[in-house]
Image (tube, rainbow, N blue to C red):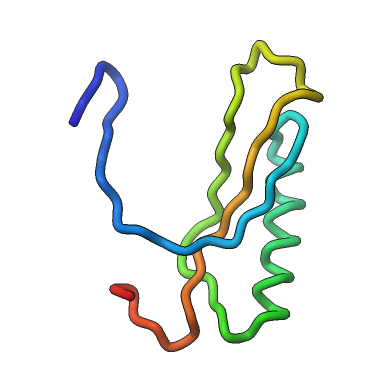
Length: 85
């Protein structure tokens, strides 16, 4: 549905590899942590990347940067699995 300027949509469930990060979410932090996750995928060849890097911020920008928490995710799937799995 819609609520003001926000569109709420249902998405299919997905599996991700993720890393939680304390501190302000910056492009540099997202890129560095996405690289850590990419390395994990490379080291676990039964998984493959199944979508774009996602960043999730969980705090108000008014909260001091050192107290903020964000998460970086990469969707994955088992190698050979269809996009419907």
